[in-house]
Every structure is written in structure tokens, then in C-alpha cells.
Image (cartoon, rainbow, N blue to C red):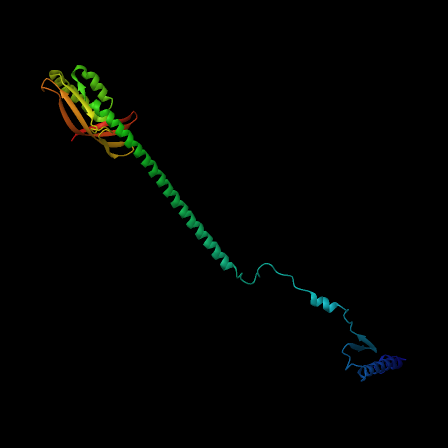
Length: 258
């Protein structure tokens, strides 16, 4: 019993030999010429059965060939962006251009301010010339004239055209020198700004001017009468007046006889 069971399960048992023979036969059939195949490339013989690889479904290869990789819009993270240096260059150029434009705008603003200021000063100077010339032509006859019969009135009117230290000096001079002499000799002095014989503007011109100060040259005729002279005496004088702008208008701050 024991020996029989052992032979039945061994390698040389009838069942095992039958399966081996069947496998050989299947292999021979697979290698026979005329079947259009050189060997079991697409079939494998296992235990007497031929296993064939599954063929791909029709259209599978075409679908694989038709597939395209999606476009990558951004730069490759592993590779440097070739446009990055040029972008930095453009940004630098834009920054430089902005700086240049800012400097030019500042220069233009400064130039505009300077021009406006100069234009304003020029207008003020021109206005000062006209006003100072008019003030000098009005002041000269009053300041340089007097009549012994009403000295206080004449001197007070003259002081109204004066300013500063010259006003104080005029008050001292008229009180100590002019008034006593005029009363003693009955002096009368009448001053006028000279005019051309045929008429026209008074002989006065502005020597220099600024918005707050001006120097005016005038030709003044003074007619003097007194007990010291037999008749009227005419003196042709050149007078230089300095005028200063004050809160009350243009006033004479100095008088020099030339």
C-alpha cells in the first residue's frame, strides 16, 4: 500500500506523463512551419494550453499618437527666464527716464518761478519809476519854495513830502537858518520844474529805480525876490532827489544840489 501510493504521486506517474506529452505536442504544433509564425512570440504554452497576448483595441495607438502635451505658459522653474534680464533693463531705463523727467520738471519749475519773480520785479520797478517821477515833480516846487509871509504853512507843506532823517534835517535847517533870513530880508523863493520852451514834459528823469527806492534828476528854475536884490533873480539849478516808498506813498529822503 505504501509503495503504490508513492509511485502514484511521483514524477513518473501516468497522470504526470500524460500532461507532459500533451505539452510537447502543443509546443510542436506551435513551431510547425506554415502557420505564419516563427515561434510563440504572441502565444505561450502553459500546461497544454496556449495563452495569447491580448491585442490592443483598434484606435488605441492613434489615440496615443494624437495626444499632445499641454502648453506650459510659465517659464521653466529649472531654467532661467531669458526675458528676465531685458525686463530688468527696461525697468532700469524706465526708472532713469522718470528720474530725468523729474529733474527736468524741477528745473522748469524753478525757471518758471524765477521768470515770474523777475517779471513781477520788472513790473514793480517800472511802476516805481512812474510813481517816483511823479512824486518828485510834485515835491520839488513845494520843498524848494517858501514865502516869508507864511513860512510855517510852507514848511509844513514841504515836510509832508519828506521822510526819514531828511525830514528831521529839513525841520532844523528851516527853523534855524531859512526862517530868520527870509523874515529879515522878506525873502520869497518860487521853484518850478523846467519845461522846454515850446512846451512838453517837465525836465525830469529817473536815474535809477527799484521797487522801493528811486533817484530822480530834475532841472529846477528858482525865482528869488528879497530886499537884497533889485529885481527877481532866476537861478537854473539841477537837483537830485532820492525817493523812498513808504506806507503813505513815495517820499523824498534826500535832496542834493548839483
